[in-house]
Amino acid sequence: MSHDGRILLREFLRDPLRVGAVAPSGRRLATVLARVAPLGGHVIELGPGTGAVTEAIRRREPERQLALEVNPRLAGLVARRWPEIEVACADAAELSQVLEARDAGRADAVISSLPWAVMPGDQQRAVMRAVQAALTDAGCFTTYAYVHAMWTPAARRLPRMLAAAFTRVTVSPVVWANMPPAVVYRAHGPRPEADR
Image (cartoon, rainbow, N blue to C red; front, side, top):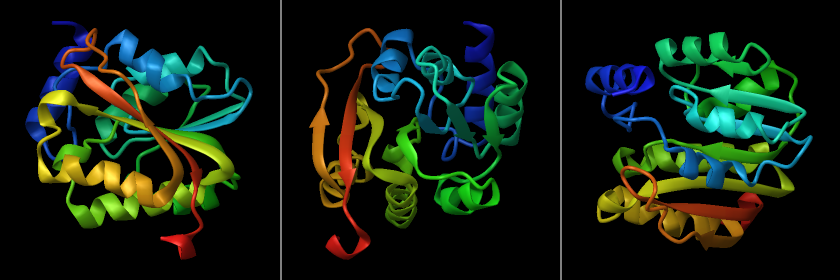
């Protein structure tokens, strides 16, 4: 097991409902997620963990990159590895407050590695509202779901929430190269609050 794998597994065992992965995202999944990050744009990452997706986003050379990680040990790790990235130790539902405190405008893309399959519905809704508010009108939100967990009620709720919150949602083919295999959701055009 890699060093990052051991770190993430340890944090998962400490708090499995907040750290939803037992291993870092694979390179292929990270690349698929990061594709929505426009070159030179403003990108927000939710739940960077040990930084597998963070590194893929960096390769896209965003003008501004902000990462929100609720776990203080993982937030510190990402901040040390990528000092050029703004890192906030905060819950994703607090995204609006974090952006306001940092005088950051709306983002072109929000990329999430949050554990939707174990997240209660009220928390999912709070995060989705925060993501919508953080995106530009043409912004894109991308997240993923592990195929083996897509049967859970929380995971089944995610596609419906995305369809209600965005004008267009697509789902990737299964990324079999990731362990465990996952699908990637891409949601474009956040709907105004009144439309939901």
